[in-house]
Length: 432
Image 1 (cartoon, rainbow, N blue to C red):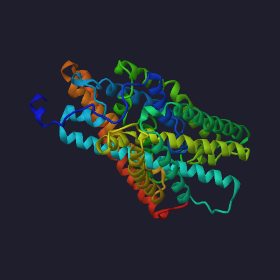
Image 2 (cartoon, rainbow, N blue to C red):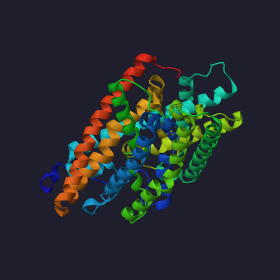
Image 3 (cartoon, rainbow, N blue to C red):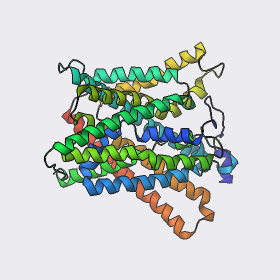
């Protein structure tokens, strides 16, 4: 590695955003916000329905264990070479050199762009569902709701300059999450108690469709737990950064994941194989209660999107921002209006053109979550810790690298197939 040192990009801690200021529990809530985002309202349909009780339950628990392990590996590499690497691409560049630096940045950009596009679709669905509770005239169609959602997300992005500035908004995010999860669980439980026997069998389909659907569900499993931006989140944590990050991860994968399990399992129990891809469309109950749940999902999605867009904002602010004055100086606000507004406009346009939420989750898991969280994490750990690892440990990490690479390829093919199928069934700017 030393011989290639001259070819490596300069690794710098220069950033326009705050680092090393947040306690571990605030970072834990950031991670939990991602896990319990309104995406959880789709997992009963996208994970449990294709996999069934045994496959879905075992898959969720196994994905949690593997994700915890992979994220812990990545967290332990944060201070490689006696230097903090506050961006994923910086860490990859330090270990591999400039080509992998660029590849990692591209993968991460795709990952975050796809997640943010999915969030805007999800917010649009929540708005449309709210409107549908009070009117069935069909005037407010999904593309319009997506446009409104993108505009609100842009307003929030302009007002919150960096990730650490979320602070009180993380409390609101947790409150909103609890509101739609509790309402979904309570209403689903009530429906499940009064409903006749449900069908929990896996939907019948051709052998090839069944295989591709199962692979897509596996991609959804890893998508559920992982951010693809752990070094950027870890950059905000106070020293000791590794020990504190491990505390935050344990919080995420224990207490922080309980709401996810509750809504996924209760939703599937209540409706079986007929569970909707957006659980709040399946529940019955008072209109005002369902409206509260949908609006809570909308507002939580706005906050969650900001977390997953923060690496792109940090890059743009650091590279192109003025670096002068406070974040609410007129010129800095104007910069965020132009740059962040432009970025989210593109996100919103893609969301409106291809509003297939489940397909976006699968494709995101395939193209970036698998490579960033599992393949690169294990291989970078081998590169850094290899001389100290025994033969069995090395074999284990190589098995992870090769296995998850194969899964990533298979999941990408499956997701593209699903998008092509849905694109032929529905038209662009579809009102789903």
